[in-house]
Amino acid sequence: MRKFVVRIFVNRAPDPLFRIEPIASIVTRVRFRKILQALHVNDNSQAPSRDDVMFDKLHKLRPMIDMLNNGFQKQSIASTSQSIDEAMVLFKGRSGIKQYMPLKPTKRGYKIWVRSDSRTGYVYQFQVYTGKEQDVSGIGLGGRVVKYLCQSLKQKNVHVTFDNFFTSYTLLEDLYKDGIYCTATVRPNRTDLPVVARQRTDMDRGEM
Image 1: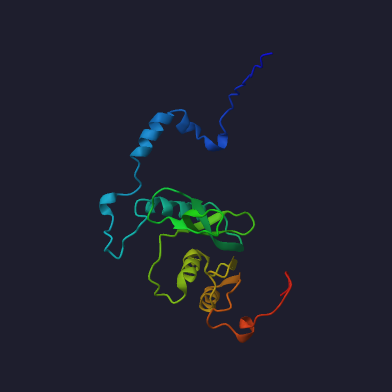
Image 2: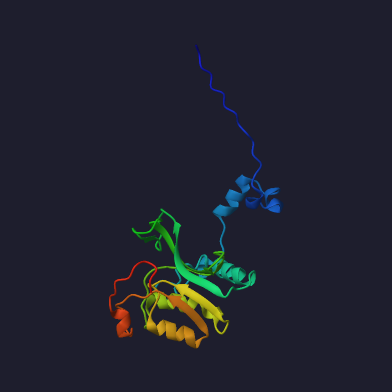
């Protein structure tokens, strides 16, 4: 007895969330890909050389990054409870700013610092990590990230949370002077911590 396999193909309508009708009805997929091959958002001839102090690894995308950050903040009302953390964008191709973090679920890709709403996850502002830089601030990479992402929150009565990678006594003092309240975990080897914070205590989960 022969067995017959019947395959049924269903033509599904495109998801309206991923279709911009004014463009999709005029530009074909082939034409869009041709445009994408030659798409530029910045003038490559104006890019500073690698020896220049103004050299930017993201020069080709900088106008778009600035536009997105400005748009994210203008199109929303900032909440009083926000969070700062890192995010990984999966990428396995060749790139000078690609990071490898073996302990993360997404191990290879672009690392992005994000300031978002604590309840909804809405991104207010982000910064793409392009690699190690010389620290002249005295608060480390984590501190520089937090201060950069909190520039627009000064005297706004906002509470920001972040983990021990970013935390330092100097950073929390600087944020408090700017009218920014924060809660953060801290590593016991951080400088300027009180003695009680350096002592190791045995506590159950949830105790404080």
